[in-house]
Image (spheres, rainbow, N blue to C red):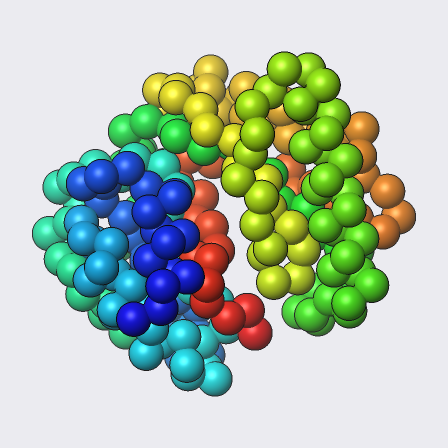
Length: 202
């Protein structure tokens, strides 16, 4: 079992939290719900070795525990139209403010080493700026093509919280977007899925 995957899950989730894992593949979407990080990591590891898997993601925020019964501690391949995934209304509380710094490049193209480094440097500037305003240290991570910052929050899942997160991302984009890198301002929805660190980006 990948220790990197398990370590990431323990950082991103609270004890007992239900997590949806979702994989984007050449054949469609695979998904499962887990209440045990060890079982999730074990289920993800063989998926991560498949060339057809483009990326593996998890829900960041607190999922309604009832959703575990959809696909309990297992991943179903090639979801059908009746196989639901986590919606914004399925989130109980927000635990993370996610900041995704991407290099400017054509869609569907991996970043070059220089583009990747530019995103990492922009993320560093953002973290320094927020620290100067009294924000705590974030989780800093490599997204594969860019950089991530994750700040712990504790907010209800309501319209006010959604708008607050959206405005935060828009202000940061105004301050830090440049010709080389951009902040993804679309990451304000509660059920946003996020890269599972320790897995491959293809």
